[in-house]
Length: 420
Ligand code: AMP
Ligand code: GLY
Image (cartoon, rainbow, N blue to C red; front, top):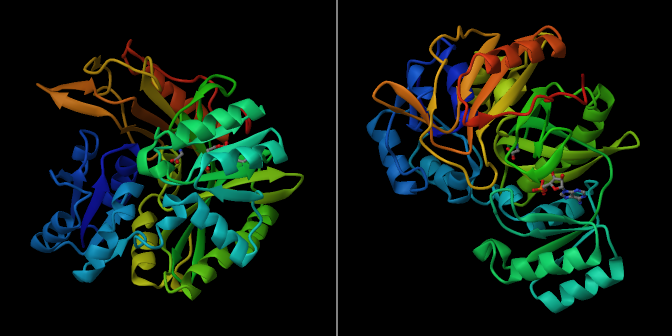
């Protein structure tokens, strides 16, 4: 098979690494890719938000399967264009990607199918939103409806913070993504992520994870895209997974199908667990980054078989072979992230690292110049270890971190603390 992966982050490096190991993979191309991905795939320069450019590229290169990494091409309808061109694709249509691209849409789906989630209301003007906050009181959660790169959510501890968040969103802080505001009940509990493949009808759980969103140790400081993650998440017991499948995932997938917009791809449910019960916080329509890194370390080559079966609508014919193991990923970011940071510092020590199915350093924001690896992003590397226990995976990930010579970078030393 010729396979094209869209994206350039640590998530896509992990996908490429796993897919490359499968003997069914002949040619592997990543667009645009990164220097880490270049070790396992050809990297191609391509505007991945252009429906025409991606379809043309796939046809010209006889691509058999396109795996879409990030949400932006999905929200732009790239999967629809590929399907229309007769190319097999892993990832939802633009209509089904609304499950991530519009928070109000997701809430409506939850209400329609009875999936447990926070009470909510939607507003298109500030005055009505202010009134609602005054009625409900704080804490309360204010969200821009659309895609805001993970920054469109304010968990307000006071009414004043909530009112300020409403004004910020309606003043255009997130552009069109803030044309509507969703206000939600604050949910207490512990968060975990659940990943389920769906081919539109069948649903196949492929793993649980927990990430660390805050930049600082002890889960303090501003939110980031994720500073580390591990899989499995022990809090998502078999019984809870069953509850989530029965009350949240299957009803959502059935509702989407009933509306004529079946969901095909990976449904990433962000869950809040409290008193032995899970409620939905949000959906994403792609793998998490960095959650994908430990998931791919655990799945290995079978990831391609599962993704392929999902794209072909035969998830009822495959099963996941779980090695009873754990994986943990620690993100190294540029000092200053998630605020402003320097670009272009050199990272040393990567060439000396022995990488195998228990130790991998996935690249996110790197570039290569004259044989040197340079940091070019906020989140730059994801050192990932796998082991028979979480402690072993943790030790391996941090041993990789300790071999990286990059004074301009930093990481959290406490990834996995809840589960360890
Ligand atoms: P979202 O982008 O919707 O996942 O929100 C980002 C983060 O905000 C979540 O991971 C939670 O930590 C927090 N959050 C979102 N909605 C709620 C809620 N209703 N109650 C409590 N925390 C929330
Ligand atoms: N790590 C969170 C996300 O990918 O959305």
